[in-house]
Image 1 (tube, rainbow, N blue to C red):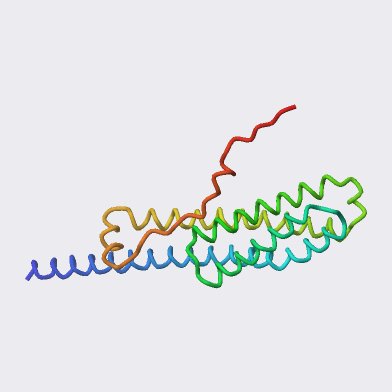
Image 2 (cartoon, one colour; image 1 turned 90 degrees about the horizontal axis):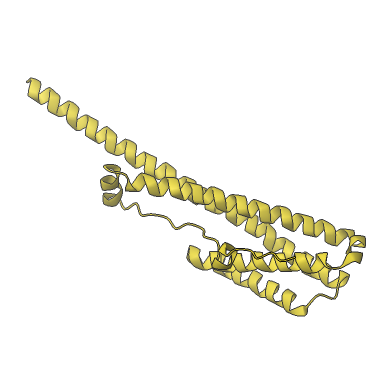
Length: 187
C-alpha cells in the first residue's frame, strides 16, 4: 500500500511539474509576442509621421529628392512586409534601412543653418527622434524577452517538455551590419 501512495505522489509531482513548466513557456511566449506588438505600435507611429516629415522638409529645404523617394519606398515596403506577415529578418532589414534614412534626413536638415525658423519641421524632427528612441527601446525589450524565452526552452529538463509540446526558439531583432562597424572620427 505504501508503494502505491509513493507512486501516486510521484506521478502527481511529475504532472504538476509538466503543467507548471508548460505554463511558464506559454507566459514567456506571450511576453515575446506582446513585446513584438509594442515594436509594431512604434513603427506605425513612425509610418504615420513620415509623410508629414517628408513634405515639411521638402518645403523647408531643397534636400536631395532621392532621399525622399527612398524614404517613401521603404515606408511602403515596411507596411507591405507587416501586412504580409513577412519573417522577422525581412521586416528587420526594411526597418533598419528606414531608420538609416531617418538619420540621413536629420543630418541633411541639420546642415541648413536657417532651418531654425521652421518650427513645424523642428517639431516633426523631435517627434521622429522620440519615436526612434522608443523603437530602439522596444527592440531591446523584445530581445530581452526572446532571450528569456529561448533560455527557458533550452534548459534541462524543461527542454524535453518544450520539444514535445512544440515550443521553438524565437528570432532576435538584430541590428544591421553597417551599424555594428566601428565609427571612424577624423579631425
